[in-house]
Picture: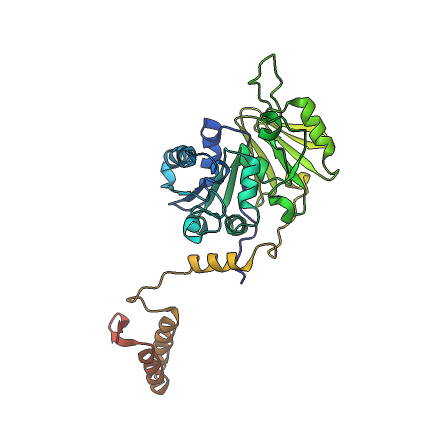
Amino acid sequence: MTLPLPPSPGPIALLGSGETSLAGGRIFESLAAQFASPVQVAVMETPAGFELNSAQVAGRVADFIRTRLGNYKAQVSLVPARKKNSPFSPDDLEILQPLLTANLIFMGAGSPTYAIRQLQGSLAWDIVRARHRQGAALVFASAATIAIGAWALPVYEIYKVGQDVHSLPGLDLFRAFGVTLSCVPHWNNTDGGDDVDTSRCFVGMERFAEWCASLPAENTTLGLDEHTGVVLDFARQECRVSGVSSVSLVRECEPKIFPAGSAFPLEMLGLTEAPLDDIRPDGWELLRQAQAPVQTEDQPPAEVLALAEKRLQARNVKDWGLADSLRQQIQSAGWLVKDTPDGWQLTRV
């Protein structure tokens, strides 16, 4: 079941950090401006779903968005898709309802590898991608930017647990666009001061170089500085850098730096138009049902309205036989048509 789609998918914003900062707020606002009010926003808890306070973690972002997008009358909903095979499963349709009509979908802080495990192959992830094809904006920050890439940098496992440098398959959002693209946030982090190199999302330049060298040659990595983001605009076919620093486009482990305020063509990432056959059919069907016009008992359906209009045209040319036949069809559908000086009126039988 396919649905009408816009000429291009919605924009994708990738933030190195600072989704609730001034820089993040400006990106949210630039995206919200593309939609009619009230803007429907869905904030997913998944990356932080293992934390006991995941609702508070996501809730702080939701509160920020609600305030920042007040001019757009933002209606913000949390999506507690925390863990597979639990009461908060990313396959539970009731939990996922806000995603079905969201104009803007956000995922942020938490664990990249946890988010991958919970969302890989899930209904939630298919709905997110399908809504993007329908024109919804996606915003990923911090851990979520790692999770959506082709190859994930297991930050906590390397930096905190002490595992050897390695990569894991990510959610691979951009595979459908014909490119192998990975992301590393907190690119310019300096929390370690002079003692510890915590750049490249806390693993340091030396371990990042080892990670980068281990990836397939076709992989492109986007390095996202803190409080800085890039908006991938499919309609304009460009990538716009926003925030306080820069983003780095890394191929064969050699970076090309784009400062805030600059832009570069989308084709530099190798993105092509997305196919539709990589999203499960039931995901499309759920969207169709959710977005169908609401029909109330007191509102005539479109086919009855069409019959009434045809009957009026028949009466105008004095084709009384056709007009009477159409009146009977309208009545068989459960409606009575009445002629008035201002036109026809329909009432329930």
